[in-house]
Length: 318
Ligand code: ASP
Image 1: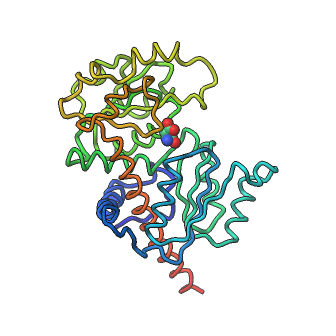
Image 2: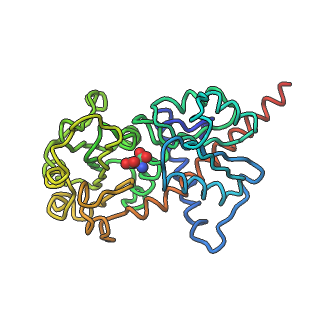
Image 3: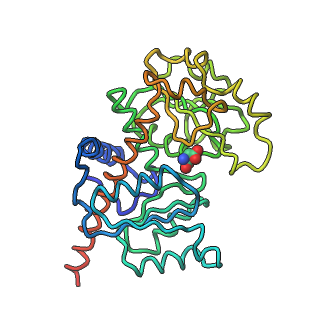
């Protein structure tokens, strides 16, 4: 059975074969995106609405570009300035948009679970572009594609996810995906930034960077997500950088060919040293951005195919 989803709400709903199918198709879109003429009419005639209730630079731009390259009509709703401010509920906003007959709804929301709720109220495909600290599925998929292309495989790798795990939907989606694909994942960071239900994930946890990075193939750094912190989780940024900031010395514990990743936005001198981030022999941070567009094209393509099939059966039943 191929990719069978109607929405992309989280990695938790995907089977390993579905993950592989998205990545295989994304590989083809990487080729398209490297051509002079980067255009296909896969989504021609379809309407994509991007609703971002939280600020975003790269994710929104990436979804917009992905839709445009596939020929969709793309609209960005400035949700910060919208009727939400006038008291409209999320569901009312969704129903209003639904009446405009979108085919793809891309949603980012500060509350975990808000995107799932919305998907139940509309009759188009919904893509989660990040909900609270819950999931950010396209980020995990683009990370997976970057790893697969750099390492030649996406299984039996040692991967360290480092930093502010507790507040990170990126960490959560990656943990689920990398686990499903049978990798060994370690979490590295101060105990105050580890989620409380960590034992559920069956991962190794390290407090010390040198130990945690020992012989890993992939080092994934995360931003300190201050907007989700409601107290003193770290002593000071200086102290944090000293203990957990990725520099050449700490990285020397990883394998010689280990790659360095970061989902962005990056805080140089806090969780990562600028020289490491810019080192083209180690850092794949720019590749992650490139893979992001391709993965989003693949996800929207597959969802649109399922939607067409679903609508065809509904019409046949009438
Ligand atoms: N851009 C990612 C997210 O939206 C990571 C971050 O903000 O630190 O979750």
